[in-house]
Length: 165
Image (cartoon, rainbow, N blue to C red; front, side, top):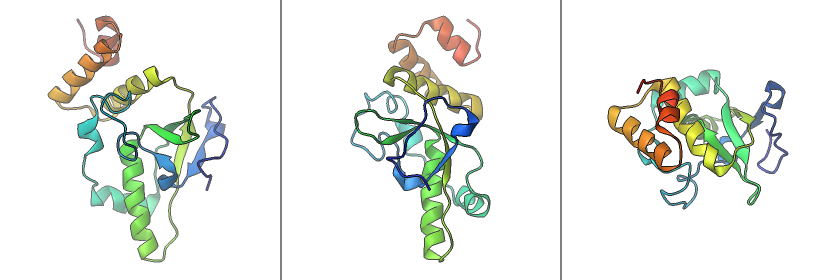
């Protein structure tokens, strides 16, 4: 598997799909001491603290991580940061602990690299979660308010969340 110091291409095309050990991926706010003001943490603390589902872990142990995670290489630290797919990385870590304990081969996490500015990371994380899984009303409202606080217009936010004004 690729290591965290491996080159990460910013083009994001499918040919840039790379496999990483989930422990080599950094989940901002979980693996770091970043405050809630960090662009990937603000408004997302409840999602960071979601429990790991053993059913999902078992599925990953059997089939691997089925959907790639979106990452970026932090130019300051060299760390590979998870932009979208934090729950998949958390579950893959637990799956690997269980696989290692059983003497079985571990799984990698497929990753697609994208070049994102800090200001864009929050938007990508919020919108992909909303489109993929939906969120509860309170989390959705907090996410919308966060995006507006970060300079997005009400029209842009309405578009992101597929609601009319």
